[in-house]
Image (cartoon, rainbow, N blue to C red; front, side, top):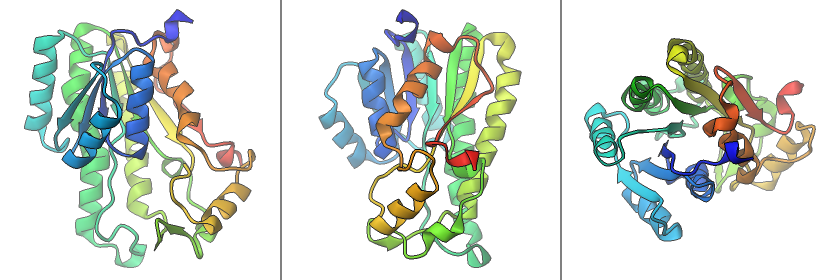
Length: 262
């Protein structure tokens, strides 16, 4: 079981102050990792620091789309620790017109979501993943979505709300997550000979403020009969970041309660 330990591993987490990101940070710290939490929202990062007062947590307010900002963090980590062991590409965003229909979805919104969900992950892989390739070890985990590997069932969205507003799953979200799966595959082959493992973690729907109508309809589509909880993802995440998965790369661990078997 020691192979599941993350003791003394330096792990970078993007989108660290979000609902899943903050949970991932707590669980990685609990597993022994030294977590480098990156998020563009300073106020949310402050909440994360206050809720997780640990010397194993460092926070950086940065825009992962900006290479210079990411490079500065990389340089700081190397000067102090000399190595980077893991990268969790978790950052994702919504645009002002995120829930607009496909027919009228603005190109500006498309470009903005893609710039965070896919371009930002690519920049982080270049900056942090290159360090892992040079040192000859490391693990990159890209957080996808079931809607990057399967189409959403549009029927569940009628009358559905999230935190009081009507919702859907827009095409840009599916496309960005599908693109991240493609990047995962590519880099697993590209850096395999350097012993850098690149895998994906795909959550199903996580319950986090949806109305009863959505929860009930979604749960009816799931063999296990419920939406996911953040803690359902922890085992797969720690496995992929740890030495327990030392011979696993290019894979996608889907944690969706069985939704995609149908």
